[in-house]
Length: 147
Image (cartoon, rainbow, N blue to C red; front, side, top):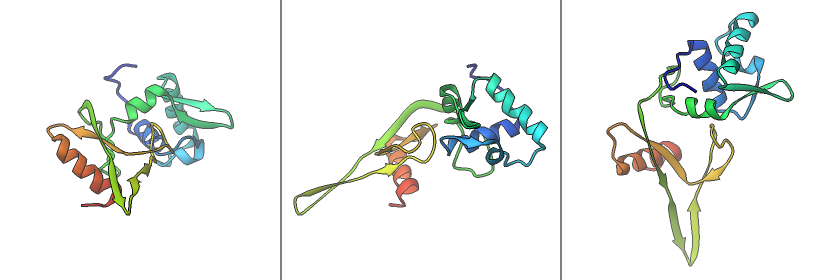
């Protein structure tokens, strides 16, 4: 997949919807309310670009390349689909508490691709110019509401 791929805003909206779902039906993805023919054109373009595939049961899902591409979206800004400049580095925040000899771990269930539905420690991408500590603090606040 080319890294400088240019997509129509409707196609970016489809990818963003699939980023938060393991798979979805045609009607669930048409958040821009395009006509069926027009929307089908954009779905087919994404399939041709190998970013989306149609699974059994007439549902659509991101391919591995689609997950990698959509994972670069700035998801902190609702209704604005922009692709972030990112280094390929991130943080994993592991919170552990011990009370009365019992060890407790703070985990989260992932609600976006890749790894939708998996449980684990909080993770996040380091934003350009942000320190590892700043990223860990931001992710803990965003994901768990802890300051």
